Amino acid sequence: RSLEWQITDKHSKILCVSSVVAGLVLSWPALPLYGIKSTELVLSPIVNGTSTECSIDDSSKNTSLPLVYEALHTLVFLVGVFSLVILYILIGRRVRFFAHRHEARRASSSNGLDATDQRNKSRKTRRERLQKLQSECSSSEGESNASTETKSSVIKNSPLKSKISFTLSSGMGNNAVDMKPSASTLSRNDSVNLNAPIVAKQAKCRKSLARNTTYLMFIISVVFILNFVPVLTLVLIRELKKDFVENMSDPERTAYRFFLRSYYISAAVNPIIYSIFDRRFRKAVSCTMREMFDKFTCCKPS
Image (cartoon, rainbow, N blue to C red; front, side, top):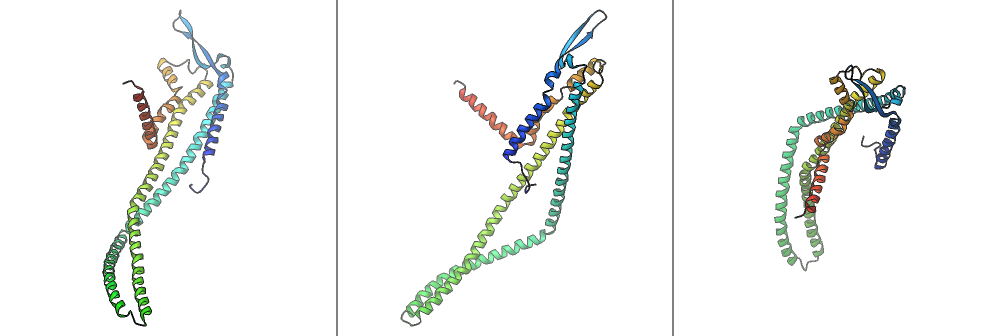
């Protein structure tokens, strides 16, 4: 929507500050809720003990606050997911619309290819005729200059000198005026033909950048959803079913511990996704690494 409202730099800064404030508001209840969680372990009939971990604090374990907190996070997550799905559906419809229109243009251009070739041939023929006419006029101009000198000596003392000289000069002026627009038109057509590939290449680069950016944002969103679904699901099940973790076997508990922190995968995978789909990100990383290497080599003693 290039002709409608756009996000300016000021709006971007306001949105960034607002996201930080919203994150603080949603996460501050974790300070009183999380702490040391104790669990009784029975290793054998005569050996038992207590294990501790950083999780829901013992003082909040038997209250409804953890469930309300996780339900709020799940609600915010679902609102974000549904918003992303709706937005990408709209984007997909627009992309499909422009793709169909592009195919229609390609079909119409292929149908008019013969007419274009015919126009190019006629344009080439006109250009050759103009060049030939220009060369003939340049040669005739030299001859007219010589004849003008001869005639000027004959009519030097004639009473019609001013009228004849005006006629000769106006005739030469008409030839010059007739030729100059043709030459300028020819040079302008040549410049347009030379600039056409450059303009087409720039348009192709802009389309490729927009397409890659759309794919990048879509993949980032999908990775975000896939990484947060497991942890939110497990936390909700844990709060609703109190003996959910205690009844697990060792392999199940290992998988549970892994997916309980699956949201870290999103932060680890994002740079890899950006490096694959964003050429500007790769260029920025390359420049940063080169600058760091140059500073290291400059500071290294010889």
